[in-house]
Amino acid sequence: MNKKRTRDRRPGAIIMARLITLVGSMAWVIVLAIAGGVLGFLSAMGVTVFGAVGIAKLLGEPIALSYTQIMVFALLCGVLRGVLRLWEQYSNHYIAFKLLAVIRDKIFKALRVLCPAKLETKQKGAIIAMLTADIETLEVFYAHTVSPICIAVLVCAAVLLFVWLYVSAYLAIAALAGYVVIGILLPVISSKKLRPYGVAYRKEFSSFNGYFLDSVKGVKDIVLNNAGAARAAEVDRRSEELKGQTTLSRHASALSSGVTELCVSLCILLTLVAGIVLYMTHDLTIGRMIIGIVTVFGSFGPVIAISALPSNLTQTFASGDRILNLLEEKPAVMPVTNGSNFEFKSLEVKNLSFSYDSQPVLKDVSFNAGIGEIVGLVGPSGCGKSTLLKLLLRFWKKGSGQILYNGIDIDRINTDSLLENVTMVSQSTYLFDETIEENLRMAKPDATMQELEQACRQASIHDFIMSLPQGYQTRVGALGDNLSAGEKQRLGLARAFLHDSPVILLDEPTSNVDSINEGIILQAIARRKKNKCIILVSHRASTMAIADKVYSISGGRMKQER
Image (cartoon, rainbow, N blue to C red; front, top):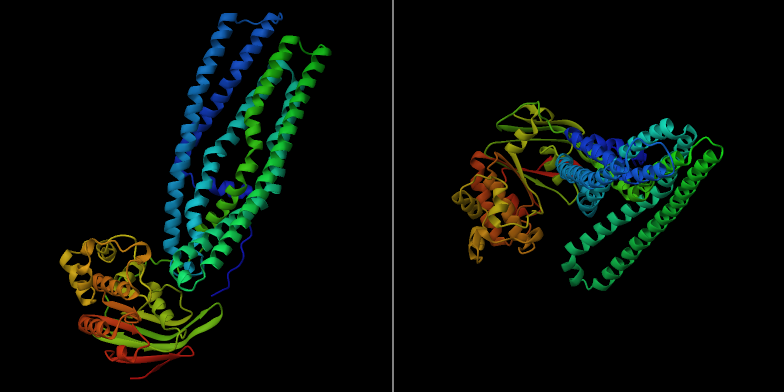
């Protein structure tokens, strides 16, 4: 495998473009939001503009509208503003939260493809932070960024056209200068200055989440080793670092907002001065000057909203970049969908080699197995036994050599077909915070209760389950914390028996059970071999007693012991 390269951060514009592409078929909702926003802002401006028109009429400006009509139009604009604002906000938040659900689904699908090879190197707390906090920050982008930018452009264009044609081209140019400074230059400069703070905060937040999650998961070991005080002190230290990063980010945002407010005031002053100068030079009547200035002043609202975006988007861009990195990450192996399906008859491994981060793990490994056989694998920890099992499931891409099922190379077998034929019981069985029955049904959702009980009897766990007050309806607790390691391992074995695949890979299936239960489990495994192919990894010599063939692995090389 190649070493992982550090990915450069994307520019903000690229992140925005990529996030917009996720909108897909819901683009029409954004169009509705933009339409509502543009009409809403024009309606809000209409209240003051019609007021200015009334004043201009009083000052002698020839206005075709009567005072009654002016008042009616102003009132109508006020009512429309409320309705259109609701329309805009509803549309924006509808698409925002709809897309957050879509993105969560995309991330989960991406994790399924990356699992398990790529996820072994990822911190679980960082993934949880991405699925929760990072995705939630995207709400700012979808609800308060995309449509406001479009609204500002369209409103400003309409105002410039009106002022240019009806008031003065010079006043329109002054307004355009203000739009460019507030709506383009300031956001670009602020974004460059603020983005490092947002990236640093999201990184610190993710690191804190990971550490805190590890602390919660390992609280029993922390207490047993009397490390609670030290761990709490470290949590406090990291919390202070996160607080410090938050403070820096907010101070930078406050400074940016202050500069923006100053520039807005200067631009408004510039427009006012331009209007007065035009009036004094007789290029404008007093009435048109008032209408023009009031119109331009009212149009700064959408532009100011754009200038505030960098402060709101610093963390959003950092979160968006992390999410896009995950969605675009290539899996260690691509799922095969256009290959061959098979019903297992034989397994043959020929001259298989595999390296992890350029470190050889397996070298020229060869063996074969078929129906009715138990093949044992022994060797010291870290010699590659578990890695070999993962290669048989194509969790990793093999380096060289062949893995053949029924003579078909594993890289040409459909992934779904492979997982139907091969199942694995790992050293650590993961149990969901659900009932025992629900955890078992993951292996076979349509299994009857009789099948569940039979699988549990074969795994020597049925009697224990029935001793519980709620039997198979007992909740196992988060991470299976209500059960011992041995009980979890036997439930994992019961899952494998229930799945009933022709090939069963067992990674230390008796490592957490006593000798009595080991004997019961080994007898169950031996009874299953009649129509199964079982690959058994264990350190225990007693476990290898049921194997038909035993291979040892040392230094990455395999040798048949019997």
